[in-house]
Amino acid sequence: MGSTSFGIPEHRFGSNGEKMPVLGFGTAVFPPVGAEATKMAILQSIKLGYRHFDTAAKYGSEQPLGEAIQEALSIGLIQSRDELFITTKLWCGDAHGDLVVPALKRSLQNLKLEYLDLFLIHWPVSCKPGTYEFPIKEENFLPMDFNSVWAAMEECQRLNLTKSIGVSNFSCKKLTDILAIANIPPAVNQVEMNPMWQQKKLREFCRANGIFLTAYSPLGANGTFWGSDRVLECEVLKEIAKAKGKTAAQVSLRWIYEQGVGVIVKSFNGERMKQNLGIFDWSLDEDELKKIDELPQSRGVTGVAYTSKYGPFRTVEDIWDGE
Ligand code: NAP
Image (tube, rainbow, N blue to C red):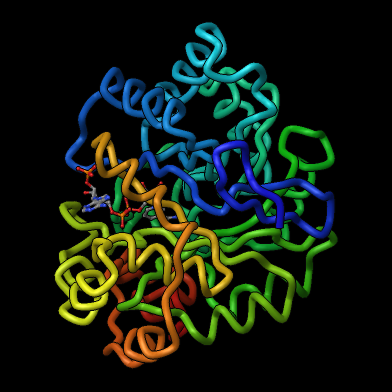
Protein backbone atom coordinates (compact mmCIF):
# COMPACT_ATOMS: atom_id res chain seq x y z
CA MET A 1 0.00 0.00 0.00
CA GLY A 2 1.32 3.47 -0.89
CA SER A 3 0.45 6.60 1.06
CA THR A 4 -0.26 10.30 0.54
CA SER A 5 2.44 12.89 1.27
CA PHE A 6 0.76 13.31 4.70
CA GLY A 7 1.09 9.57 5.47
CA ILE A 8 -2.49 8.42 4.82
CA PRO A 9 -2.35 4.90 3.31
CA GLU A 10 -3.92 4.53 -0.14
CA HIS A 11 -6.05 1.71 -1.48
CA ARG A 12 -5.24 0.85 -5.09
CA PHE A 13 -8.19 -0.29 -7.22
CA GLY A 14 -7.38 -3.44 -9.18
CA SER A 15 -9.30 -2.37 -12.29
CA ASN A 16 -7.68 0.95 -13.23
CA GLY A 17 -4.89 1.43 -10.69
CA GLU A 18 -6.56 4.51 -9.20
CA LYS A 19 -5.46 5.30 -5.63
CA MET A 20 -7.89 6.24 -2.86
CA PRO A 21 -6.65 7.54 0.51
CA VAL A 22 -8.24 5.11 3.00
CA LEU A 23 -9.27 7.95 5.33
CA GLY A 24 -11.73 10.39 3.77
CA PHE A 25 -13.38 13.60 5.01
CA GLY A 26 -17.19 13.54 5.32
CA THR A 27 -19.32 16.55 4.37
CA ALA A 28 -22.84 15.48 5.45
CA VAL A 29 -23.53 17.93 8.24
CA PHE A 30 -26.28 18.04 10.84
CA PRO A 31 -27.47 20.48 12.05
CA PRO A 32 -26.66 22.46 8.87
CA VAL A 33 -23.90 25.06 9.23
CA GLY A 34 -24.14 26.85 5.88
CA ALA A 35 -22.00 26.93 2.74
CA GLU A 36 -19.28 29.29 3.97
CA ALA A 37 -18.59 27.31 7.17
CA THR A 38 -18.52 24.09 5.13
CA LYS A 39 -16.03 25.58 2.67
CA MET A 40 -13.80 26.86 5.51
CA ALA A 41 -13.85 23.48 7.28
CA ILE A 42 -12.85 21.73 4.04
CA LEU A 43 -10.02 24.21 3.45
CA GLN A 44 -8.77 23.64 6.98
CA SER A 45 -8.88 19.88 6.45
CA ILE A 46 -6.83 20.20 3.24
CA LYS A 47 -4.22 22.17 5.22
CA LEU A 48 -4.12 19.34 7.77
CA GLY A 49 -3.58 16.68 5.10
CA TYR A 50 -7.00 15.29 4.11
CA ARG A 51 -7.04 14.49 0.39
CA HIS A 52 -10.18 12.35 0.00
CA PHE A 53 -13.59 14.09 0.18
CA ASP A 54 -17.03 12.53 0.36
CA THR A 55 -20.07 14.50 -0.78
CA ALA A 56 -23.47 13.76 -2.37
CA ALA A 57 -26.02 15.61 -4.46
CA LYS A 58 -28.28 15.27 -1.42
CA TYR A 59 -25.92 16.91 1.10
CA GLY A 60 -25.79 20.41 -0.37
CA SER A 61 -22.01 20.29 0.09
CA GLU A 62 -20.94 19.87 -3.55
CA GLN A 63 -20.77 23.64 -4.16
CA PRO A 64 -18.81 24.50 -1.00
CA LEU A 65 -16.46 21.60 -1.73
CA GLY A 66 -15.95 22.90 -5.28
CA GLU A 67 -15.23 26.38 -3.95
CA ALA A 68 -12.80 25.03 -1.35
CA ILE A 69 -10.93 23.11 -4.08
CA GLN A 70 -10.67 26.27 -6.23
CA GLU A 71 -9.34 28.24 -3.28
CA ALA A 72 -6.91 25.48 -2.26
CA LEU A 73 -5.53 25.62 -5.80
CA SER A 74 -5.35 29.40 -5.91
CA ILE A 75 -3.52 29.75 -2.57
CA GLY A 76 -1.20 26.83 -3.37
CA LEU A 77 -2.37 24.30 -0.75
CA ILE A 78 -2.44 21.84 -3.65
CA GLN A 79 -0.82 22.16 -7.06
CA SER A 80 -3.40 20.19 -9.01
CA ARG A 81 -6.91 18.77 -8.65
CA ASP A 82 -5.35 15.34 -9.32
CA GLU A 83 -3.95 15.37 -5.77
CA LEU A 84 -7.51 14.96 -4.47
CA PHE A 85 -9.90 12.02 -4.48
CA ILE A 86 -13.49 13.24 -4.86
CA THR A 87 -16.59 11.10 -4.37
CA THR A 88 -20.18 12.14 -4.92
CA LYS A 89 -23.44 10.18 -5.01
CA LEU A 90 -26.47 9.77 -7.22
CA TRP A 91 -29.66 10.76 -5.37
CA CYS A 92 -32.64 8.37 -5.50
CA GLY A 93 -34.69 10.85 -7.58
CA ASP A 94 -32.03 10.62 -10.30
CA ALA A 95 -31.71 6.83 -10.04
CA HIS A 96 -33.49 6.29 -13.36
CA GLY A 97 -31.55 5.16 -16.45
CA ASP A 98 -32.00 8.38 -18.46
CA LEU A 99 -31.29 10.73 -15.53
CA VAL A 100 -27.94 9.36 -14.32
CA VAL A 101 -25.53 11.02 -16.78
CA PRO A 102 -27.30 14.44 -16.51
CA ALA A 103 -27.19 14.14 -12.69
CA LEU A 104 -23.45 13.48 -12.73
CA LYS A 105 -22.91 16.43 -15.09
CA ARG A 106 -24.86 18.64 -12.65
CA SER A 107 -22.71 17.42 -9.76
CA LEU A 108 -19.54 18.15 -11.74
CA GLN A 109 -20.83 21.65 -12.40
CA ASN A 110 -21.48 22.17 -8.67
CA LEU A 111 -18.00 20.86 -7.90
CA LYS A 112 -16.38 22.88 -10.75
CA LEU A 113 -14.60 19.69 -11.80
CA GLU A 114 -14.04 17.93 -15.11
CA TYR A 115 -14.16 14.46 -13.59
CA LEU A 116 -14.95 12.61 -10.36
CA ASP A 117 -12.80 9.93 -8.81
CA LEU A 118 -15.76 7.89 -7.61
CA PHE A 119 -19.50 8.07 -8.32
CA LEU A 120 -21.79 6.02 -6.07
CA ILE A 121 -25.46 5.05 -6.16
CA HIS A 122 -26.49 6.59 -2.83
CA TRP A 123 -29.18 4.05 -1.83
CA PRO A 124 -30.52 0.91 -3.55
CA VAL A 125 -33.91 2.57 -4.09
CA SER A 126 -35.36 5.15 -6.46
CA CYS A 127 -37.89 7.91 -5.89
CA LYS A 128 -39.89 10.18 -8.15
CA PRO A 129 -37.68 12.47 -10.23
CA GLY A 130 -37.37 15.89 -8.65
CA THR A 131 -38.17 14.74 -5.11
CA TYR A 132 -35.50 15.27 -2.47
CA GLU A 133 -37.16 14.56 0.92
CA PHE A 134 -35.32 12.32 3.34
CA PRO A 135 -36.64 9.92 4.53
CA ILE A 136 -38.40 9.40 1.20
CA LYS A 137 -42.18 9.84 1.35
CA GLU A 138 -44.14 6.67 0.74
CA GLU A 139 -45.96 8.08 -2.28
CA ASN A 140 -42.65 9.03 -3.95
CA PHE A 141 -40.93 5.71 -3.39
CA LEU A 142 -40.04 3.41 -6.34
CA PRO A 143 -38.06 0.18 -6.73
CA MET A 144 -34.83 0.70 -8.65
CA ASP A 145 -34.39 -0.72 -12.14
CA PHE A 146 -30.84 -1.98 -11.57
CA ASN A 147 -30.32 -2.86 -15.24
CA SER A 148 -30.82 0.62 -16.66
CA VAL A 149 -29.31 2.48 -13.68
CA TRP A 150 -26.12 0.40 -13.56
CA ALA A 151 -25.74 0.58 -17.37
CA ALA A 152 -25.93 4.38 -17.05
CA MET A 153 -23.35 4.34 -14.23
CA GLU A 154 -21.05 2.35 -16.53
CA GLU A 155 -21.67 4.93 -19.25
CA CYS A 156 -20.48 7.66 -16.83
CA GLN A 157 -17.16 5.81 -16.46
CA ARG A 158 -16.86 5.18 -20.21
CA LEU A 159 -17.41 8.91 -20.85
CA ASN A 160 -14.52 9.62 -18.42
CA LEU A 161 -16.86 11.69 -16.24
CA THR A 162 -15.70 9.51 -13.35
CA LYS A 163 -12.70 7.24 -12.87
CA SER A 164 -14.60 4.63 -10.86
CA ILE A 165 -18.19 3.72 -10.01
CA GLY A 166 -19.70 2.03 -7.01
CA VAL A 167 -22.64 1.76 -4.65
CA SER A 168 -23.67 2.69 -1.14
CA ASN A 169 -25.97 0.99 1.38
CA PHE A 170 -26.02 -2.22 -0.69
CA SER A 171 -26.54 -5.58 1.07
CA CYS A 172 -24.91 -8.86 -0.05
CA LYS A 173 -28.10 -9.70 -1.92
CA LYS A 174 -28.26 -6.41 -3.80
CA LEU A 175 -24.54 -6.61 -4.63
CA THR A 176 -25.19 -10.09 -6.03
CA ASP A 177 -27.93 -8.62 -8.25
CA ILE A 178 -25.60 -5.87 -9.51
CA LEU A 179 -22.67 -8.25 -10.08
CA ALA A 180 -24.94 -10.49 -12.17
CA ILE A 181 -25.59 -7.68 -14.69
CA ALA A 182 -22.41 -5.61 -14.45
CA ASN A 183 -19.83 -5.21 -17.19
CA ILE A 184 -17.91 -2.96 -14.80
CA PRO A 185 -18.29 -4.28 -11.24
CA PRO A 186 -18.70 -1.75 -8.41
CA ALA A 187 -15.29 -0.65 -7.06
CA VAL A 188 -16.68 0.40 -3.68
CA ASN A 189 -19.64 -0.21 -1.38
CA GLN A 190 -19.98 2.57 1.21
CA VAL A 191 -22.02 1.50 4.25
CA GLU A 192 -22.50 2.22 7.93
CA MET A 193 -19.75 0.45 9.86
CA ASN A 194 -18.21 0.90 13.29
CA PRO A 195 -17.43 -1.34 16.29
CA MET A 196 -21.16 -1.42 17.18
CA TRP A 197 -22.20 -2.48 13.65
CA GLN A 198 -19.32 -4.50 12.30
CA GLN A 199 -20.79 -5.77 9.00
CA LYS A 200 -18.93 -9.11 9.22
CA LYS A 201 -20.93 -10.87 6.52
CA LEU A 202 -20.81 -7.92 4.11
CA ARG A 203 -17.07 -7.47 4.72
CA GLU A 204 -16.45 -11.09 3.78
CA PHE A 205 -18.66 -10.82 0.69
CA CYS A 206 -16.95 -7.64 -0.53
CA ARG A 207 -13.46 -9.04 0.05
CA ALA A 208 -14.35 -12.20 -1.91
CA ASN A 209 -15.72 -10.11 -4.79
CA GLY A 210 -13.00 -7.46 -5.00
CA ILE A 211 -15.28 -4.64 -3.80
CA PHE A 212 -13.59 -2.17 -1.43
CA LEU A 213 -15.82 -1.62 1.59
CA THR A 214 -15.84 1.91 3.02
CA ALA A 215 -17.30 2.82 6.41
CA TYR A 216 -19.54 5.82 7.00
CA SER A 217 -20.68 6.96 10.45
CA PRO A 218 -17.46 5.39 11.83
CA LEU A 219 -18.04 7.20 15.14
CA GLY A 220 -21.76 6.40 15.21
CA ALA A 221 -22.64 9.86 13.79
CA ASN A 222 -22.90 11.35 17.26
CA GLY A 223 -24.95 14.57 17.28
CA THR A 224 -26.79 13.95 14.00
CA PHE A 225 -30.42 12.88 13.58
CA TRP A 226 -29.27 9.57 12.06
CA GLY A 227 -26.75 8.72 14.78
CA SER A 228 -26.15 8.39 18.53
CA ASP A 229 -23.41 8.39 21.16
CA ARG A 230 -23.31 4.59 21.42
CA VAL A 231 -19.84 4.32 19.81
CA LEU A 232 -18.13 7.22 21.58
CA GLU A 233 -19.71 6.26 24.93
CA CYS A 234 -19.00 2.53 24.63
CA GLU A 235 -17.23 1.45 27.86
CA VAL A 236 -15.05 -1.15 26.11
CA LEU A 237 -13.77 1.42 23.60
CA LYS A 238 -13.25 4.00 26.35
CA GLU A 239 -11.19 1.50 28.42
CA ILE A 240 -9.02 0.57 25.44
CA ALA A 241 -8.57 4.26 24.63
CA LYS A 242 -7.50 5.06 28.18
CA ALA A 243 -4.95 2.23 28.25
CA LYS A 244 -3.44 3.42 24.96
CA GLY A 245 -3.49 7.16 25.58
CA LYS A 246 -5.93 7.59 22.66
CA THR A 247 -9.60 8.59 22.39
CA ALA A 248 -12.57 6.26 21.84
CA ALA A 249 -12.96 7.93 18.41
CA GLN A 250 -9.39 7.01 17.46
CA VAL A 251 -9.87 3.43 18.68
CA SER A 252 -12.98 3.12 16.53
CA LEU A 253 -11.27 4.56 13.42
CA ARG A 254 -8.15 2.44 13.95
CA TRP A 255 -10.25 -0.71 14.39
CA ILE A 256 -12.02 -0.04 11.06
CA TYR A 257 -8.68 0.56 9.30
CA GLU A 258 -7.29 -2.69 10.70
CA GLN A 259 -10.24 -4.57 9.16
CA GLY A 260 -8.98 -3.53 5.70
CA VAL A 261 -11.88 -1.12 5.24
CA GLY A 262 -11.86 2.56 4.15
CA VAL A 263 -13.20 5.26 6.51
CA ILE A 264 -15.16 8.47 5.91
CA VAL A 265 -15.24 10.59 9.06
CA LYS A 266 -16.75 14.05 9.52
CA SER A 267 -15.46 16.69 11.88
CA PHE A 268 -15.60 20.43 11.31
CA ASN A 269 -13.58 21.03 14.48
CA GLY A 270 -9.83 21.57 13.94
CA GLU A 271 -8.66 19.59 16.97
CA ARG A 272 -10.91 16.63 16.17
CA MET A 273 -9.90 16.75 12.49
CA LYS A 274 -6.27 16.33 13.65
CA GLN A 275 -7.21 13.65 16.15
CA ASN A 276 -8.97 11.63 13.47
CA LEU A 277 -5.84 11.68 11.29
CA GLY A 278 -3.75 10.26 14.15
CA ILE A 279 -4.53 6.59 13.65
CA PHE A 280 -1.73 5.29 11.44
CA ASP A 281 1.28 5.07 13.78
CA TRP A 282 0.00 2.64 16.44
CA SER A 283 -2.08 -0.53 16.51
CA LEU A 284 -4.59 -2.52 18.55
CA ASP A 285 -3.35 -5.74 20.17
CA GLU A 286 -4.98 -9.15 19.98
CA ASP A 287 -6.79 -8.85 23.28
CA GLU A 288 -8.23 -5.44 22.35
CA LEU A 289 -9.35 -6.72 18.96
CA LYS A 290 -11.08 -9.66 20.67
CA LYS A 291 -12.95 -7.36 23.08
CA ILE A 292 -14.18 -5.21 20.17
CA ASP A 293 -15.13 -8.30 18.19
CA GLU A 294 -17.45 -9.37 21.03
CA LEU A 295 -19.35 -6.06 21.34
CA PRO A 296 -23.16 -6.36 21.03
CA GLN A 297 -24.29 -5.33 17.55
CA SER A 298 -27.00 -2.88 16.48
CA ARG A 299 -27.46 -0.79 13.35
CA GLY A 300 -27.64 2.97 13.85
CA VAL A 301 -28.84 4.28 10.49
CA THR A 302 -32.32 2.90 9.97
CA GLY A 303 -32.88 3.48 6.27
CA VAL A 304 -34.41 5.86 3.82
CA ALA A 305 -38.04 4.86 3.77
CA TYR A 306 -40.34 2.99 6.03
CA THR A 307 -43.35 1.55 4.28
CA SER A 308 -44.38 1.40 0.69
CA LYS A 309 -46.91 -0.20 -1.53
CA TYR A 310 -44.30 -0.11 -4.31
CA GLY A 311 -42.09 -3.04 -5.25
CA PRO A 312 -40.20 -5.19 -2.81
CA PHE A 313 -39.01 -2.36 -0.54
CA ARG A 314 -41.57 -2.38 2.23
CA THR A 315 -39.45 -1.98 5.32
CA VAL A 316 -35.98 -0.99 6.33
CA GLU A 317 -35.14 -4.69 6.64
CA ASP A 318 -36.25 -5.20 3.04
CA ILE A 319 -33.91 -2.45 1.91
CA TRP A 320 -31.04 -4.09 3.74
CA ASP A 321 -31.94 -7.78 3.19
CA GLY A 322 -30.83 -8.48 6.74
CA GLU A 323 -27.29 -7.19 6.37
P1 NAP B 1 -19.34 10.24 12.00
O1 NAP B 1 -18.20 10.66 11.16
O2 NAP B 1 -19.34 8.91 12.66
O3 NAP B 1 -19.62 11.28 13.16
C1 NAP B 1 -19.66 12.66 12.96
C2 NAP B 1 -19.95 13.32 14.29
O4 NAP B 1 -18.93 12.98 15.23
C3 NAP B 1 -19.99 14.82 14.20
O5 NAP B 1 -21.02 15.27 15.05
C4 NAP B 1 -18.61 15.26 14.74
O6 NAP B 1 -18.72 16.50 15.36
C5 NAP B 1 -18.29 14.16 15.73
N1 NAP B 1 -16.85 13.86 15.80
C6 NAP B 1 -15.98 13.77 14.78
N2 NAP B 1 -14.75 13.44 15.22
C7 NAP B 1 -14.85 13.31 16.57
C8 NAP B 1 -13.92 12.96 17.58
N3 NAP B 1 -12.64 12.70 17.32
N4 NAP B 1 -14.37 12.93 18.88
C9 NAP B 1 -15.68 13.18 19.16
N5 NAP B 1 -16.60 13.52 18.24
C10 NAP B 1 -16.19 13.57 16.94
O7 NAP B 1 -20.73 10.30 11.18
P2 NAP B 1 -21.26 10.69 9.75
O8 NAP B 1 -21.10 12.15 9.52
O9 NAP B 1 -22.61 10.07 9.65
O10 NAP B 1 -20.32 9.91 8.73
C11 NAP B 1 -19.19 10.48 8.08
C12 NAP B 1 -19.49 10.81 6.62
O11 NAP B 1 -19.93 9.63 5.94
C13 NAP B 1 -20.60 11.83 6.36
O12 NAP B 1 -20.20 13.16 6.61
C14 NAP B 1 -20.90 11.54 4.91
O13 NAP B 1 -19.93 12.13 4.07
C15 NAP B 1 -20.81 10.01 4.88
N6 NAP B 1 -22.13 9.36 5.07
C16 NAP B 1 -22.63 8.61 4.03
C17 NAP B 1 -23.87 7.99 4.15
C18 NAP B 1 -24.40 7.18 2.99
O14 NAP B 1 -25.61 6.87 2.98
N7 NAP B 1 -23.56 6.81 2.05
C19 NAP B 1 -24.64 8.11 5.32
C20 NAP B 1 -24.09 8.86 6.38
C21 NAP B 1 -22.84 9.46 6.24
P3 NAP B 1 -17.72 17.74 15.05
O15 NAP B 1 -17.87 18.09 13.60
O16 NAP B 1 -18.19 18.81 15.96
O17 NAP B 1 -16.32 17.26 15.40
